[in-house]
Length: 167
Image (cartoon, rainbow, N blue to C red):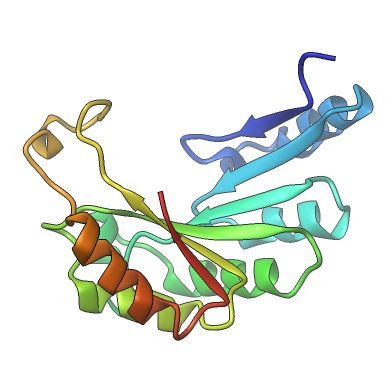
């Protein structure tokens, strides 16, 4: 067997009405399913969770809840993001939250605030921003934190989540 599972990623997969039938087709073939989401469609996430359609969930947390719209560069219904976080944390499906860290956009304090926003989460990944494969050319000159800075941020984030990793 060469393939064990399928990751459904985006854009945002939960914006597609045919996502659930698509996942069911994949599961019927015997594959595990990981779903990546930005959390903007908690209603779809709830259906997926309640029907136990995925084996792993990953949700991007782009900014502290208090400043989410600025962090994503457009209006966002933060209550939907919060609901998605609660749904993910309150089920038995393995999950992670993750933040891609761009130094110019997220301060160490912002990352601590994100950790507080997802307090009690089992896994939180701080992803080092790499400017090689990007959709927005404005990010080409952006950087991330040094390894030492990341370790300090990780140590502080670890106070609020069960495990905090850097990748």
